[in-house]
Amino acid sequence: MLIKSFCSQVEMIIWVAVTVTCHLCLGRHTPCRDPSEEDLEAQIGHRVPAYHLLIEKENITPDRELKKCPNALNQTSDLIQDTSISPWSFRVNEDPERYPRKIIEAYCLCKGCFTAPTEQDKSLISEPFLMSVPVLQKTRRCVKGHYKYRLRYVKIAQFCNCHLL
Image 1 (spheres, one colour):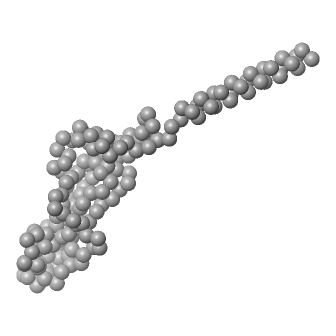
Image 2: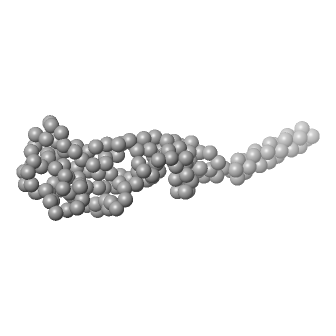
Image 3: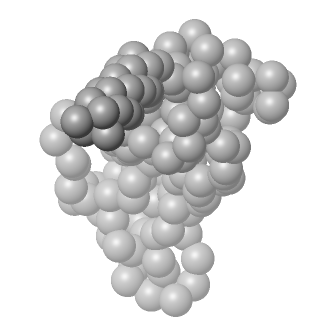
């Protein structure tokens, strides 16, 4: 009887210890979340001081719908992307796992290049000019309740140009 009572007390102590430990663990566990936009901007600004010069495109509105190759050069536009022999436009490159999540990038409208106002030469290729741009890429690592981001570079099209096939 004494042994049974002792075993019951030991079982109760173990049960209480396990329960308290589990509650403490659960109470301390906070779900991981993204840092604020301000924190991410400060992080990338600290790592790459010229970040804004590389990423921002002022006075550019990305297309809502992708454009197609025009039949002729637009000689009346003030925009270089319209009057170029390799015309281009802009779209949003979006990735929810990086900062900035949205980056404006160029895309070529034609496969060939214009050699006259209404003539396209298919022996010339219109290709995007890519530039490496710094971004913060989200990792799976969680520190103090926030995901960690690492610096990496992604190639983003800036404009289109022509070259021989």
